[in-house]
Amino acid sequence: MAVIIWRILPLCLCLFLNEIHGRTEHARLNMTHDRHSGVAVLANYANGINVSYTHWAWNIDPNTQRGYDLLLAMSNEWTFHPLIESQLTFTFNGFTPNRTVDDGEFMLVFSVNNTQFFSVVIRLDTQRNTWKYYPQINAANNATSFASTTAVYEDIIRGSSNGTTEVPMRWDRVSGNGAWTDIPSLTQAFYREKLVWPFTVKLINNPQDDTLLYQCNLSRSGATLQVEYESAFVGGESVDVYLLNDANDNKPFYIYSIEAEYYDNRATLQVAYESAFVGGESVDVYLLNDANDNKPFYIYSIEAEYYDNESIPDIQTTEELGDLNTTEMLDLSTTEIDIMANITETETMDSTEMTETASTETSETSDNMQTSSDEQNIEQGPDSTLSGGAIAGIVIGCFCFVLLLVLGGWYLLKLKDKKANDPSGVNKGEYMRPDVEVTPIDDVLAQKRKESYRLSAGAATT
Image: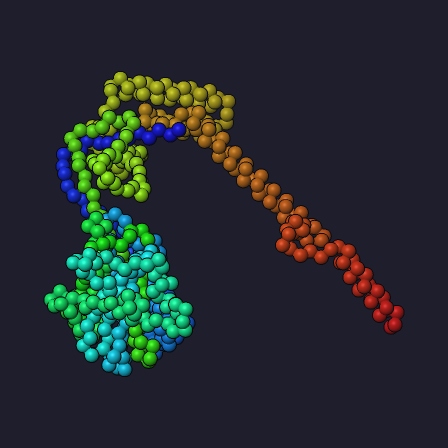
């Protein structure tokens, strides 16, 4: 079993709030890139929604009241955080044709976990109809939360016929049979201007305060519409955004692109003391709820991580050593220096005696070479770091290396000569490769016999 030793260095006493940049996701989706990093735009082509190559956009012109026109589907990376405030932002870029400006609108439905939802109306026309939302927030009637159903897609979006051949209108399906409420702006109780593209929708979900703030920023018009529910969406669940054109009678509009962004603003508090824990001992962390009177909370997961700043010192290079003080480099005792000098001097004397003995047994040329070697050894004196044994080792190593090269060259030449003398001229190694097709020898011999018979028959006729 591995033992983890926790090392905590002494720290200065301080208390501060250290903001950690939360997780951020961003994606820009359009006709040619309709999915990216856990988010995708799905067009309902079965309803007649098509791509306009003239405008390079989605042409939202349905031929039925069933289903949706565009679906912005998001995976787990884009879900609201279950514990802290998080937000989703969507920016829609589009265009409204003249025939739709006279009378047109579309709805956005925001659904979480396919059970909770709320809807808004985006006005495209100049009839000065008001922008709306559903469900209504009415504190007097305790209506402060979202609408809910067992399955948003099946019950609200798809538009089942409820046993009849007629499909309920989209306007009624997403609003509890037309129970719309005028949505206020920051400056007035309602807003009735047409949409000037682009527009941005922001959902700020706060499970700590149990609130959800919806904001629609109309930057070109200078208006901001907002509604705050006194209930937060469930965190960690799938989020879907449905776009539905209210009309199916030739009142289209175009969506060029949709930008989606997720952000949370998590933060942490840190305290440091002027003393350190004892190292090498076990560490325990206890969690205690202060109350025992039905005030619970939930722990989804706990992540643990260990880190220390211990590092292995690097070997200093010559340049690094050159920066040191000279007195530190020469910090050796006199006794050590004397001993090193005596050892070097003894080695030099032994080498001189060996040289003189060898000079009486060799030729004059060898005597001159050895005398030159003695002079070099004498010049090196106490600073020499190579002994006679080290020199002999180097010479033997060089000889072995040269011998290895010679033997290797001889072996290669022998192989080359053998290949040149091979009468067949075929590389026998190829017969061991499974990917090489080799003609069986019987087929080769049969072909040669046929050629021999043909030549013999030709010679006989002539």
